[in-house]
Length: 232
Image (cartoon, rainbow, N blue to C red; front, side, top):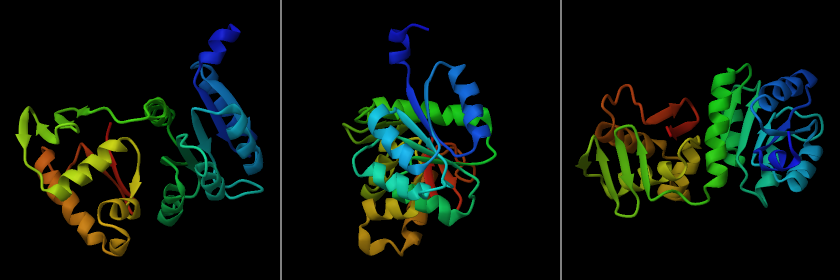
């Protein structure tokens, strides 16, 4: 591989203290032409994030020196690089803490290679797209952000102002898990953080307008106990 080609490859920083996991990433990512960088500790991750300037960071939470959530917080002080958490911690509060700290996605170990690569592709698209496209499409759903128009199957639908703001927020973070707290704060404000029923009601109403079968949604995906994600 030429130096020029290597320079143009997407840079992925994997932070994990398990040698077996690092070897696993070396195998699957190098085979798919990524520029892979490895770190074993939180402090090494912070240094590598500053010097390598990765396009994506894949981060384990259980590091020997710093908790992964603290690593996320420190990186978020100066960078918007997409961060995918991979962890054996599967409790809802662990997921919420990581996402609230600034992680973009969360996968629990063990995970499927196909799902991991799909999440990486989503994160890569986000890393090179600083501003959302004015027209978002996913299957039969079309959201024209410039004209504030929403259509399903070619037919325009009417949303309340709150429903539209909620959908626009999910569009602007499509593919990313947004916690209940993040959504409540941005749509209703800090005073409503303890009123999740507002979010549930509006998500239900929105699904009835944009989903073919609201009981089996294809667009707005529930992350149980954590929040919601708009499928890209």
